[in-house]
Amino acid sequence: MESSSFRLKTAKASGAVLTRLEEWPRASFVREPTPLIGATNLANAMGRAPADVLLKMDAESGFGLGGNKARKLEFELAPDRVEGATHVITCGGPQSNHARLTAAAAARLGLKCVLVVNGDTEPPYTGNAYLHRLFGAEIRPVALAKERDSAMADVAAEIESEGGLAVVIPLGASTPLGTLGYVRAAVEIHVQLHDHPHAGETWIFVSASSCGTYAGLALGFTLLQRKDVKLVGVSADITQAEILESTEGLVDGAGALLGACTPLLPGLLHPTDDYVGPAYGVHSDASEAATILLARTEGVLLDPAYTAKTAAAMLDWARRERIPSGDRMVLWHTGGYPAALAL
Ligand SMILES: Cc1ncc(COP(=O)(O)O)c(C=O)c1O
Image 1: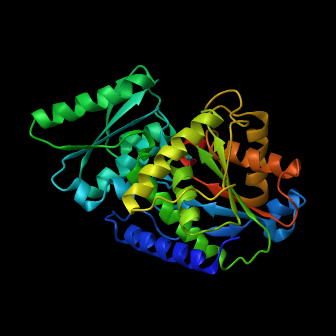
Image 2: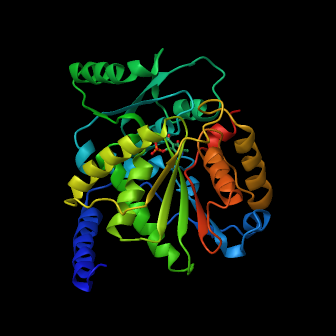
Image 3: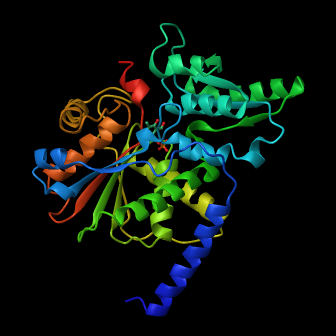
């Protein structure tokens, strides 16, 4: 059992770390806090008590059509990082939400944006592909995902040779620095949950791909010592082992930035790759059913690559009674609206 002096030391250490986080330079893209709303109709459809299902709406982060990447970009594109820069470079697929928000952020900061895009870059440009261009990004196509990093380095060198300076943001902004955005998001929901008192544990379902979102939440809830929180990381494309590996690396890196070497709370992480379905971005029967259910119970739009699969996992875990009665669920809606309309 923990002694009260241990608990006090942990609280003080976390307090210092969280102050450091708050003082870290960042841009301001997110309209905070994003809504945390009760989903009573959905809870009813799931056969749960009205207070048992909440939606955390980072889809409505208030910038560039919303989504999780805005929080990471606040740190990646902080004033000290863009000082003297002329360009921002990042990468993704043709429907990348991250590339869209990076293009929007670059526009807001008065910087040029180059997107290295793998896959189909032919018209018609719908959803994010349309927005990449609307927000003014220059598109550099590559055939394969594995060519993206070297193409970004080539573009950065080309810009430098012309007297410019580029900030290069790796895939998904899932760097230790970008991960800090989701440590802050954990603090944000921690405060919001005070208005939703609940006796049981809180199971948060969140999408995991490049894993900065999952890692930041994991580090944040650990620093806050929220032992009542369980984090279900639902893969959009990678294996359960890959989620754990990426998450651990990002937690270590982000923790080091904050001067925290806290091991994650035991029992916090619950990664799963059971809901990827036929392929990345392609609906499974379960994700399609989840999309229809959320639309018709709560008027909430899910995207096929990330949030629909996360919702499918939450519905399935509840149905299989993997969430004990008396516990509640939060679906962390990470965005993807443009891709949802580009099917
Ligand atoms: C809408 C949406 N949700 C979730 C994710 C996954 O977040 P992460 O890459 O931090 O794991 C992404 C990543 O591209 C995304 O665009």
